Length: 464
Image (cartoon, rainbow, N blue to C red; front, side, top):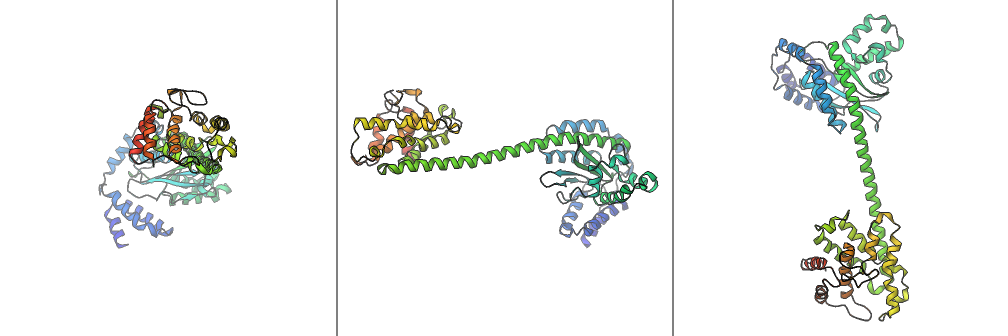
């Protein structure tokens, strides 16, 4: 505490008056058992007064009051309010404007939090460096000052609704209309005490329609002058502008939070969908023990090729190219659910009729998935993954760019896995041979661009 006294005694604005003000602040903190932030306050006091003159010229400060053009300040503040989409940033701008232009010992703002149902100090500044920590003061509707403004009792005291502590104290002592009102007799002394604790000489309510959004708190002016009627009127007008801007900023923030909630909900549902797709693909694979793991491998190969192609215009036509490749690859054989087990599990080569039955899985898969709106174009990708680049594939004999881009990718990945996997009636080919076959089919069975991307991914070791 000796260090604190030394700092207080060495920093002076208006000499003894400023020292007494700081001493009251230190006493206030002690009364409130704020010893944890004593050091913080001392540092702030020291830092905040480093650039202040030890003996400011009272005449200069009074000239400053007279020279202020409050209409210009108000117009500039109103223009700046439009820019802010965050309530916190808006309030900081308002407090900073008052602090810089009016030069009060302390300026702060209490704002109502709907989520927590109390008024919280969200910003606080002072020309002398003394400030109450933001978030430290929280007042509910039972608080005397909150009651005064929220129940509109303040308009029984003053026409503007703003409360000047000095005038209120004088009127309460000498005005029978106030001192004779029982409800006011019990409330006003508590309000005055509350304003003392909050270092507020003037309190200005911030209303939007019938709702109280907050209270602007103004400490005494560094010049030592009282607040004039013109200044009170200025702060009241400013509060009205703040109310509109604060409501807009809070609306934007609420919408932003709602968008975030919807996005998180979408992400959660999307993850569930992917897990469902993976489970469905695994269930289809399990029906054919000879092709177990086929879907997983095709998906991995297709994703490796997609990485090499994601900068192409065809890829950018998709809302989410790589994810669409992932889902379409997972579900590309979903139509095999309509193929009889006797055909899927046949240990010998298929007859022509059996092969025609298997070929139906492309259309069946698209038919199953097309009603699911969230899948977008994936049903078309699945329908066309057995089309050939030269137009001799199935089911629609599409050729070249008529074939959906992702279908062309799946076609290469699907064929590579089919050639390198063992079957009951044949052994899988070596990967080098399968790669050469795909290269030889470029421009015939496969899209040359997709083949080039596949070869590049293979050389990088991504197709394994």
